[in-house]
Amino acid sequence: MNRHYNPWVTRIGLLLMTIFVCFPVYFMVVVSLKTPLDIYRQPSLTPTNPTFQNYIQLFQQGFLHNMLNSVIVATATCVVSTILGILAAYAIVRLRFPGRNALGKFVLMSYLTPLILLFIPLSVIIQNLHLSDTLLGISIIYLAFTVPLSTWFLLGFFRAMPPDLEEAASLDGASLPQILRLIVIPMAAPGIATSAILAFTMSWSELFLALVFLTTPNSQTMPVALQDIILGDVQNYGLVMAGAVVATIPIVVMYYFGQRWLVQGVAAGATKG
Amino acid sequence: MTQQRLVEPSPPAPTPTALKRFRPPHKPGSRARVGVTFVSPVVLILLVLVAFPTVASLWYSFTNLTVGGTGSFIGFANYVALFKSPSFANAAANIVLIIAASLAAKFVLGLALASLLNRPMRGRKLWRALVILPWAMPPFVAFMAWRLMLDGQAGALNQVLGWFGIHANFLATPGMARFSVVMATVWAGFPFWVIGFLAAMQTIPKELYEAAEMDGATSWQRFINVTMPGIRSTVSVVAVLSAIWTTNDFVNVWLLTQGGPSSATMTFPVLSYLDLTNFQLGSASAAAMITLPLFVVLVLWLSRSGGEEYK
Image 1 (cartoon, rainbow over the protein chains, first blue to last red):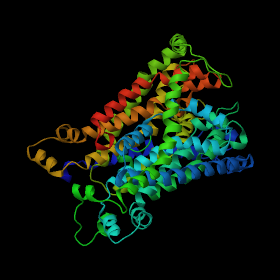
Image 2 (cartoon, one colour):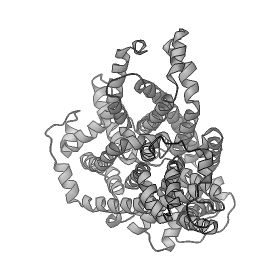
Image 3 (cartoon, one colour):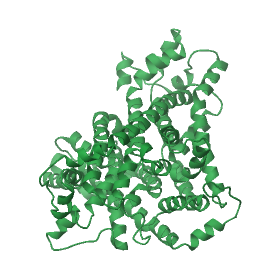
Image 4 (cartoon, each protein chain N blue to C red):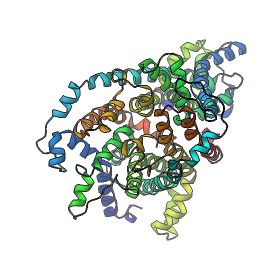
């Protein structure tokens, strides 16, 4: 069968794909290593006089604080939505209670509902709770998309898990918390890890709601701080790209290690595209 | 895989009856109670943060609510004002010019690259990891990188075009700005299509291709008659999900053009956000709600043509 594939078509295709995929990322890194003057005066596709000046200046401007805000918000939403997602998904798949099928549909609908339909009433809710412009407020808001994501993703995962072991453990007299802790969670570890990575990434990368809800520099997460620079009067691309590189590294590392499970998750239709 | 290792030796496949028969411990009544307890936080969150806001948005769109003010019912006035605004025509046109164009391009590119990655090659896993890169990186980073790529002076594309003596104002003229938004949107989103198509292609039995080959089918004929029917249901799921996300994307247009020049790249999410920054919650809701019928149609289509998990 192999002889019917012209290897040159494969090679040229892969080359074009690599350029298309990598070039913007490469160029982002190049510009982050140039001085602000060189970016405009000496446009080039390779770094001229590479320097870490942009990175240093970025952190001197307090970018670490924005990063910390992002870490707090992403970690909080990720932990909460993963724990609640495990409990709810397990209950929907294995425990019989009235309305569980309807609930499964409700989770899917919530997962599909675009944020654009929700953000205005959410802003009113947060204002009434006096949580405007706080990390707690934005973390609660982010649950609107991370909880449906985690629950829906884990629903699919638990449905595919054979119940034999849980059955055996229950015959041996294990309690439900024991079954969850000793069997379900270890068996579902890849699914749980994937849904946690997805939830973390989505909160980490979220710009729209952060823009609406976080209005003062002190509470701003990384994406908002960077959009302020790129849409500012002086477009300092060097600074923005340095920030963009810093924001991307943790995500790419997570994706690299979680790759195998994530690809299955994506194939199953989880998250953005 | 993990599961098979755990249920050794000779794991019996979970039969539908086994799935039905199994009940975690405790009496039936307590089981239901535990179930309800387990789901209640999620139910509460979904009701407060998703269901209620959706309904409230719809209600707001019929009021003249402002930030800090109390709104009163004004019927379809927000929608009428929206229809009359110059941005509306552009936002409506861009559902086809930007959103549908992006989807079409993602489809073609996704299919082409999935077919490419489905060919025999060395280091296949590495190539697949590579193709995910644009999708894995935060979308705001992707669009910031593209804004830089498209910049008139510092941008890479103009440097390359400069070799041929061409200069393009990618973000400055209406036509080019739309084209640029589409290009960046496709770049940031196409890996989802590639992975989806690739997964579907791998479920097609090899025997089908071998049989087609025996009958003397060319590679193009095999593609049309074996591959395409095999991935049809995946295509429709991927397309609907991507259509929902692309229609409601804010970041792509916002970071590239903010809807400009002179609202040429305006979309409803950006329009809604701009209304919010003017404290007009009522008209912002109307601009957000205008795509609700489209969303409903897409979800219905998904529940009809998608697999079990979308029913």
